[in-house]
Length: 298
Image 1 (cartoon, rainbow, N blue to C red):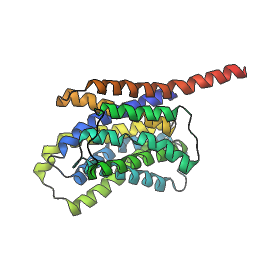
Image 2 (tube, rainbow, N blue to C red; image 1 turned 45 degrees about the horizontal axis):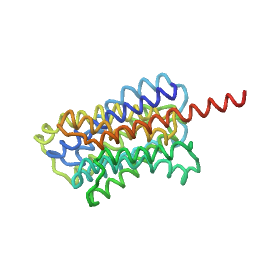
Image 3 (cartoon, helix red, strand yellow; image 1 turned 90 degrees about the vertical axis):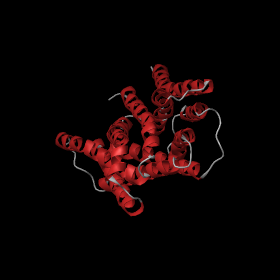
Image 4 (tube, helix red, strand yellow; image 1 turned 60 degrees about the vertical axis):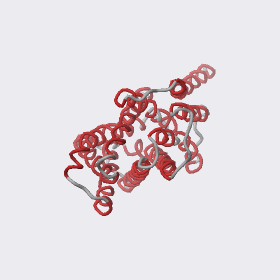
């Protein structure tokens, strides 16, 4: 897979997650956040399961020691991001949530330097700031006073950043993206359902009412989108992946307009353009730099 194809996979993930904001916001009217998380990831586990068997037959490389433990850590990071985002949506707006979740674009390169001592390509820094600015403009250029939900969503962005970095480390190393995907889904499903059984009530009527949102989040937002993320990140860096995944804010605004009748403000369109420019910069600048270096060496 080429880097361009990998980035298209990541862009698809962003599009699916963008539509998922609609499902998450409407499902919370009838079902608790823990049950929603547990059920959506249980469905995602079933989506990934047949792909795991196909992958196992085609892969001759045995799993190294500690592989499953590392996959479980990724699952815990994913659950941390999912649960803080979902609870945050109880007391913050979708606009604030979309912007604050997008802060992982900035957190990824910072954490990469702090913990991995890896310096990303210089274009990542201005592109990350551009993407964050674009998300801010897409939210209308204003944020209400931070409340508990906003703070939870900032924590969510940190968990997303950790999950992106861990996938960047382990996905390419193991060569088992489907197993990684299913394991992280299963961790979220088990932890979510266990906590929900203790802390949240559940009724058949609530599940029926939220079933369309649960199915979309399980099959598409959790299953297909995260699988595309894992596959795509095998062929690009975590910092570049974060830029493309941040397009979820752009798609969230578009699907909100189409499905919920929400309007994008003029400054929001400027934000869309800034996000798109950041994505192009991440894609084109490293390639142009490599070509210049090859030309100079020749």
